[in-house]
Length: 512
Image 1 (cartoon, rainbow, N blue to C red):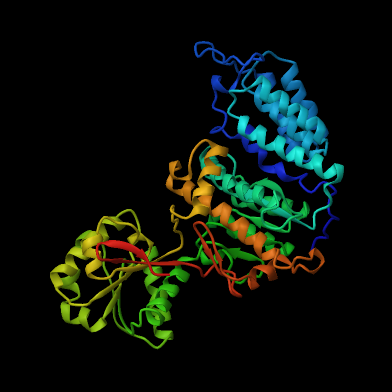
Image 2: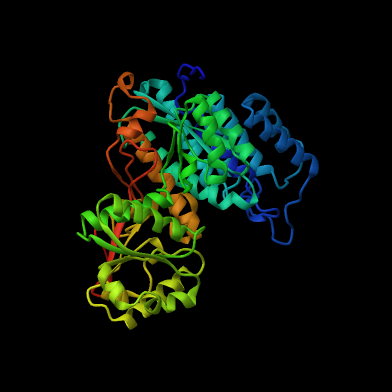
């Protein structure tokens, strides 16, 4: 077990660990991004005159990045200064200028960071980094306010972030971090509890199991109280082993494999596992819908559909309900003939049929199953499903069967809190969450919700000295209703919070 360092005097001094994104991700700095490199007078370089790539400057810049990642901010500043001042304008000029300011910030030299960032904004007004520079400058100025009499923070939460950098993961990492950043900004502005500060420490998982293990070890060494990440089960499992050894609370935001947290005390999954979703649907059907006889139809073993069906069936039987039949269907044609495989008398005997589907054909399987049920002509049959049934263009036919399903993620854009998040997100990133690819959209909301849940769980005690360890705080936290997530651990390390929706009268409505 590691020993924790004493709190660092500058409560936001590790906030910009993830700021490497702005300097290293190709999505942020394309190879010939002339529009991001602007002369001292503010004039863009002509498109016909692309900014050159200078190999020596690239090497100096990378040395600065390596030093920054190693925590040697003095050396990082020197290397970035060389990359800026020793060459004519090149592809890393603005990135080096921004990273030099961040190195100053990390050293606690907030006045110099403020001055450097103000100069950056004057000299490069069209840079793609302008938004980042403005945010960093605002944090530096906040620290200058604290240093001149703002007072010490009542609680400081050391938030570790373990995400992958690199071409294939750039968009997902940026989406996740943008959501995290929105939540951290809200806390640090005093909107949660005045005086509370979140300090972020970033480590690159490299999207590999070994990289994930190293990232968790580095975050433990850096004194993180809790870690968000890694993203996927493949890297979250090995990272969880390190978290367990270090007794460092880790929250995997997206991993759905039960093996990530199974048998572990310090590893939590914010995304309900596939098995948990099936169990929760069975509980809801039996306890809230008052159904006590079920049929279960799924795809073959090895699919998410089969995992959902197995966990549903076991939970229904545990609750004392009857499972009248359980069957598997393979392929679209079999679903289109569901009424032949399971005749009307058997369907009617069940009362409610659980029909989870998964995979690329899921939308077509939904339509085929509904068409087959229409041919069966079973009155008052209820269909239960999973998130693959969400918001499909089948409102009328689904309403005939009161299709009710469970989903781990849902956003209601009419909520004022969601609208505020969208506006802030767009102001920060230049696009709304809905303009991101589907995984990115979900990660943006997830990053925001997980941070707010973690902070809320920790701040249930207003006295920093009385605050429980993060693990206990998560286990005991009340249900959190977020913008896109419902988080409810209730003594478990797997989130049990899901949403329930139903098709009725040709429209979709939330039940709970």
